[in-house]
Length: 278
Image: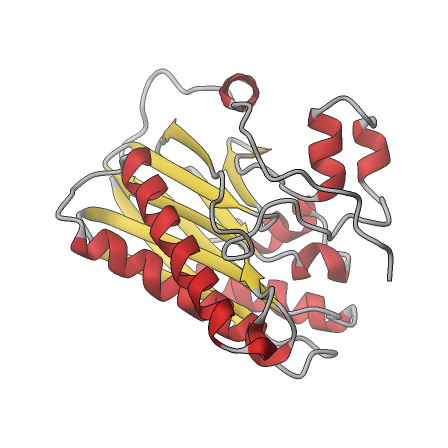
């Protein structure tokens, strides 16, 4: 199968710095395609530095590990190295204290796609007119939903929606979410920073601008739409599209969603208290 890649990023209209970083690679690091999206936090230069270190460290880790293929264990080990790099950098300068980044990555080899993510930068799989969230949301409300503390409907507009319980570099150790998905011809995987949702662009509206053949043009349209709506945050979009012969037995997205729910593992995290509201 052939993989087409495209990406774009924009600072938005209300931020002085673009704290997002994005990387798309073809035929490097032992995989046919690699996509990395990071959304930094920590304010201005610190957030930009955190996301930049995260992208550079993760891609270097894969390029140097000697491995091949879309192996979730490879991605997990690269995530550990990335977390250490950002955490150590945050200790070097008092102005960088507490900086961190989200991390959402997929590696594709053949029909196999491995995913790893930390934070709330989402990845979506679009197939046959349907879509599924394939990353795990590590915002405070989403974690509370998984624990059964609040209902899913209560998480959508929760006042702490953008407070993260997991982020690259904030803690010395981090628990990541990993998954493996079998891709099919026509599948489109879309990654974005939360600036798309913050601007008010829904998943369905975003897909309407990306489903055409011109991936680069579609990304420009998504970014332009976010800017039209005020773009209060940085906006980053990356797309990987699978092209090739159709397979006879196509997996339904509701099966992927059920598989993801079963694959969520309980992990031990540092004990957290609810963040104080600004």
